[in-house]
Amino acid sequence: MHHTEVAIIGAGIVGLSAAYALLSKGVKNVRVLERNTIGHTRGTSYGLSRLLRFEYGDDCLYTEMVRQSLQAWKLLERRSQINLYTRTGILALGHEDDNYTLPSYQLLREQGFPIERLSHQTCRTLFPHFNTQDYNLLTYNTNAGLLHATTCLQTLKGLILDMGGKIITNCNVAKITHENSRAPIRLQLEKQHELAAERVILAPGPWIHHFLGDLHLPIRMTRQYALYFANLPTSTFGLSAFPAFMAGDMYGFPIHNSRVKGYEPGWLKATSHTFGPPVDPDAPPAIDQSYVTQLVQRLCDLIPQLQQARLAHIDTCIYDVSPNEDFILDNHPQDPRIVFATGLTGHGFKFGPLLGEILGALLYQTAPSIATERFRLARFAQYMLAPTSSVA
Image (cartoon, rainbow, N blue to C red; front, top):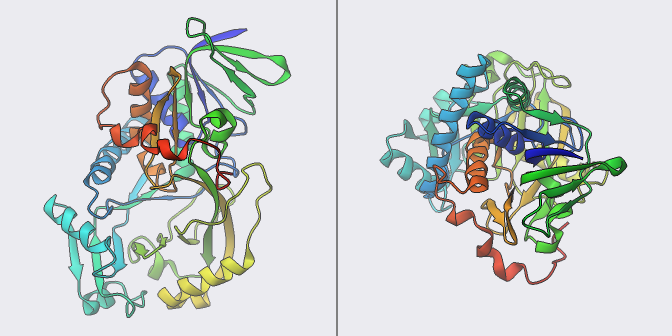
């Protein structure tokens, strides 16, 4: 039986970030176990890009977390000498009474962010791509951008290996045994292999119920889609001319150069944050063509030039959704040597380095840079009395 100080289950953005954080703090023996490959298409971290935005309504905690996360991404860029983040600015199209756009604007103004309120005429001058007639509040924040998702994963992988960490791919953890608090935690692997660990971090994304089913976590998995459009002029929709945007539940990115296999450099990405139907993470990915058709039409209404574009590619992905869309970051209620992260709800990627630091602090019972009481499991006690049919 092999032995390790820390075993991390899941090599998505959270698992890799946790490994990096621990190794950076001097933990010597860290192993990351991934059931597939890094960046595999069944996970939640793969793909071309993720949005980094500070707009969270009047929620100053998440805004501060984004601030700290961006600082951490920039440190990773300097250490790796690899571009992970590209600044794009973000155009928000909303309504005075949507309880999001105006509070975001007010909070960010108070905190000194370079955000401004645009008139319809100014917006048409700066960003003529958008049909703004259905919106009565337009803001533009230059402090926003996109994270190059696959590049982020591969960069963290390289840094982890450079620091002496181990990453084992195609390694399925079948069971975790931790009844005896005086004995190491035992991870049962395939082919009757076992790994003993002093501490464990669970960051398996959509497979969280496989490991913590007895806790009846109030997390449901939903099917989501990201759409990629081709045949758009880079001069009009590239980084220098087109911003990242949010319009209600829809959001998207400018065209940017991609060196990720399976993605063309001239594609524009856009999608909806609206939660899709429940899904089994082990079921084959499926595309609801009716839903995609409706989303394409809505995006074309917002950005009329998309009517001349070609829908070139569809990513299918999975959200792990909590009841209030807040994360769950906590120690296992029966064993503090086990820490887990779930409920990332489609907006967790940008917080990767910060979440890794928080999980490491919980694991070793030190103070994280962000207070974690809001993310504790106990707040969902009423949901955990019995399994619910909404959990897939």
